[in-house]
Image 1: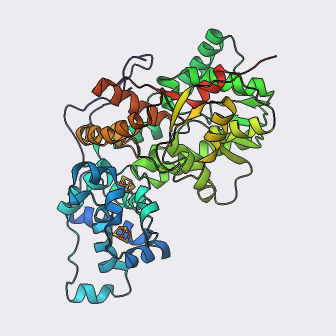
Image 2: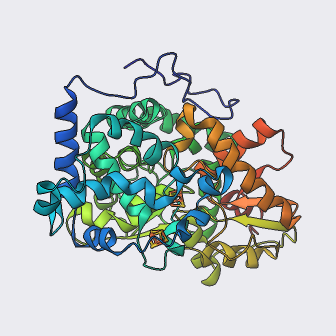
Amino acid sequence: MSEIVDNNPLDLTGTRISVQKPEVRYDVQGEMPDEERVRIAMRSFVKDFGAHSAIYMESCIHCGMCAEACHYYVQTGDPKYTPIWKLELFKQAYKREAGPFAFVYRLFDLKSAVTAQQLQQWQELIYDSCTMCGRCTMICPMGIDIAALVSQARHAMFEAGLVPHELWAVAERAEREGSPLGATASTFADRCEWMADEHEVEVPVDKERADVLVTISSIEIMKYPNTIADFAKVLNHMGVDWTFRTDGYEATNFGLLSGNAAWQKDMSMKMIKAAIACGAKTLILPECGHAYGALRWQGANLYGKPLPFEVLHISEYLARGIKEGKIRLRQWPESVTFHDPCQVSRRGGATAAPREVMRALGVKLTEMGEPGLNWCCGGGGGVVTIHRADELRYKTFELKMKQVEATKAEHLVSSCSNCRQTFDDGQAHFQWDKTMESLLEIVAANLINT
Ligand code: SF4
Ligand code: SF4
């Protein structure tokens, strides 16, 4: 693999930090014959087929409703982007290898065997053109969780060495260095010191004991470092006993996004161990969508038992702090629309929390349709890292821009740094006049410190 990740951690000017376009693409990893790739992928599919996926595979009624829920289909009209079609190979493998009538399917060749060429073509459908946003899941009358099945299908693709170049590279770097974007422990500690000086705020790092462990995403460390100071301003204002820890700070999980379950576990376990080591009762996840899904909803499974602390997204923690009277805010009566990060809101269920925070700020909120169901930014699921997907991503971003424009709101706010990065990139591409603002940043700027 060629090195594709920018090693300049201090460059804050790029709109899409640190993932550069590879000169030569390597979208197939490892040396192995085609038959071996197919055998490995099939083995992984069969291993992952549980009762849920079997029910999903059997229950599609081919109504096509999921198509209109998917930004890729809506913006292109291309049937290959129909959500359930993205699972066709998964279904083919299920029917032939694991379903109740698998031997009949094999005997009469009713479903053909999956080929290496099909697997390679499939890469585009389950990586480049699925953000795992879950809109199709919400719309499906049979409750088929297509987003979860795409995530599951990525396991087989990773094992078979069929991950898009950039996504594989950032995941591998995250596993090797502890951060997908070069935000190593020492870089993070330096940035904490810098932010503490710049904002004249105390930023505790590596306290041995603390009630609250705060984690952060590499995008925030490298591109939006003021987030470090914003966390400090809010938690200090609340009088909380908290800390960052250099042995468990990175919340992004490219193991999850690339499909490597072992790396996903390694990345989650760093935070889990750090929280246990300092005796934290609460672990706060930053404004990062997939980090929420990875730890809040999958953390206990990876740990093997219930986590000995609660896990909250920062928007939930802010909402709680306001409710308990620990956060006092000035009014900020601006005209705002809120972009729901798919993995926190639609997939994660934390839809009410940011709205409670905005209510406390006194904003004039105009929703983009039903809360929790607004269009995806198009950059989640690791898609923003994949350069060959740029054209398609910009096409889907146009849908999002229209939705934002329709509200006529002056401010665009969200609570996911990956969405923010996608919006920054889209803003630069389309020379759009809207800049996404962070909910945490707005709260930190409006604290009443007595
Ligand atoms: S999860 Fe989102 S991006 Fe993926 S198929 Fe469904 S609607 Fe489309
Ligand atoms: S909406 Fe559900 S049932 Fe209808 S085609 Fe899509 S996956 Fe099948």
